[in-house]
Image 1 (spheres, rainbow, N blue to C red):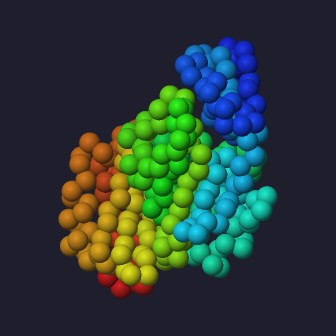
Image 2: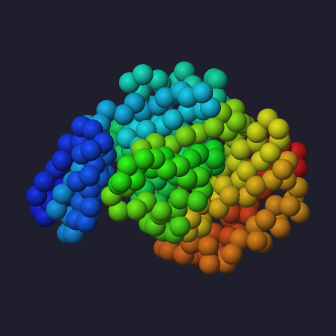
Length: 284
C-alpha cells in the first residue's frame, strides 16, 4: 500500500461538524483511507479525518436502520461487533441484512482491509463493482448528506451514482449515513455474482429483494456503469424479466478488462433469472 502522500501538509481531526468547513479544493475526507493510500493523489494538500466524529456504526431507528458512513466493512458484515449494536443481533430480526455480508465477500480484500475500509468510502468511490453500494441500493437505502452550508439532504441511493467514479456529492459535502427502511430489512433476498476469474473483480452482481406485499426489486451492479434497479409489483414472470432487461440502455453496460459489454449483458440475464426464481421460492 502506497502511503507516500507527500503533497499533504495538514490532517484535520474533525471533532464537530464545524470542522468539516475545512473541506474544499485540494482536500479530501479521510475515513478508512484504503483508497487514498493506495495510489498517488498529487492534487491533495489536506485530509479531514471524520472517524474522530465518533459516529455509531449501526443504529436502530423507528423506520429502519441507520448505517454511519464510517461503519467499517467488518462491522457492516458482522465480522466485528459495532460499539453498540452488532449484526448478530439484527439478522434474526431483519433477514434482509444477509446481503451485507454477501456484498462484502464479493470484494477481494484482506481482513485488515475489512477492519479499515468503510461503507461510506465504498459508496463514494462509486465504482461499478462496489458491492456494498449494490447491497444498499438493493435494499432501497437513502443516503444522508451534510452539505457544506449546513442542513441535511436525503437522496435515494439508486440515484446517487451517475457513472463510474461519479456521483452527486458536491464539493465540501460529506456523506453522514445511509437509511435502510424496515420493509427492506424484513424482505426475502437473493444474491448472485460472476467473475472471469475466481479471485477477479466482479463482472456482474445481481441482488434481489421480495417484500411482504410481494413487491420485488432486482438490482444490477458491476455489469453496468451505475446501479440499475428493475422494479416489479409482484414476482416477475420470464416475459417481464426479458422486457425489463431489454429496456436497459446499451451504453449502460460496462466495458473494461474484467468483462466485455456483450458478455456482461448475457451473464446478467442468467443471474437475474436465478435471482427471480429464488425470490419466487424456486418456481417461476
